[in-house]
Image (cartoon, rainbow, N blue to C red; front, top):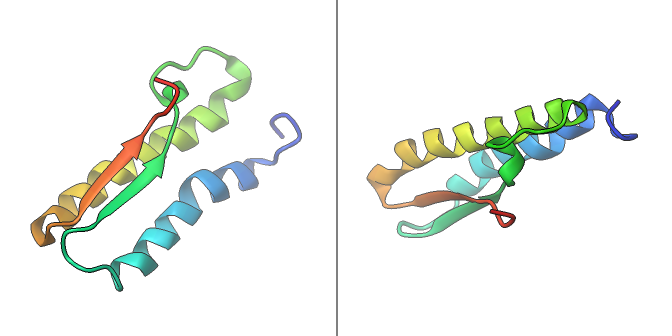
Length: 86
């Protein structure tokens, strides 16, 4: 548990749900659209040991986004991750 949130919840919300949503969405998206995920600067600047799981989940999201961008770029779908607190 991290701050009352289970490890399964953190991974589900920050990684699994984004992955599943992207897989479903890609089947229905027209060429030339954008997929944007929300991350945070903690994925790059971890500073608290209590946030290790959260940092890992956001780093996984950034890696997934890079991979998805490589896979979908050939069909002109842009994939980005936004870190609003940077």
